[in-house]
Length: 403
Image (tube, one colour):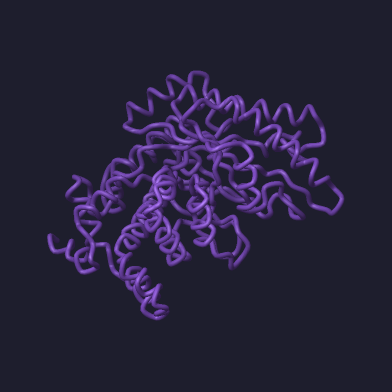
């Protein structure tokens, strides 16, 4: 296995720098990925699925213990609401993890049928804004660095809503929220072209999210969910553009075949996942310090709906796929690629990228984990442990991922 690092050397990379990049890389897992959840049709119960936020933290801690790269857990309010957030914070630290992004819920209340922050009724808009302010207070209490906002607001029919007035209401609400956020806390603005609104959504694409972020200030950035694009969109180009503008705040990793399928990251289109990391690694090494700083601050988060899969193994598989995409992107010889691009050698440039993607980095990652005191195969280690059998006995078929 010691020879696994030869893979790095053959691609002209420094093994020490390569290992440092792997050590510095973290992926945040979502609390809602550990409970029974995930479809418009039926939610299938799984033995041992988490029933509350404390069990979700325990499961997330297992993923971190086995992979070594998942030290934070995103929470969703009110799904993960508790009476004592200092106790939640303390329990997370006891388990060896921390609370990550706080995700507000602006789509579940009956009043939000026609929108929340963009609703025509002032009272409904006030309720939605107050919920965001509540999430900021919770984030303060648990030490969270970010509010991760997905807005379900939209319309189904032409004429149903006034686009510019809705935009104004949204901007006013987010100005209030942004002003309430302490220094060091970021607002990550997600976008989605459709669903649940099928004529329009109020934050439909990266441009809409970018305009809002630019309006609010430097601590507002865009969050890219891999499933939130029309078919055929070049997501890696969006990533590169946002990096260049200093506005890429984070990712919600998943995969899709047709729509917002929320499949395990890298399961359907691993090449796209690799190409996204190719842009991220390139930006991290950019001579422009602003671009490199933006790349260094990106929050990598999982957002998936595990319905037919067992929860923890699905999360481990996703995390490993993400780490694999990073490792392959780190193999690209940036200087040689830039030279091929500058001389217009199309085939050479494409070959360098594809060669990195087609390289089997599994022996390399196994060696890296062993050197970190981690299982070489985290998924096999999970199945070999007593944890899945213990939680199945203690929890039965578990609870809901969301209420």
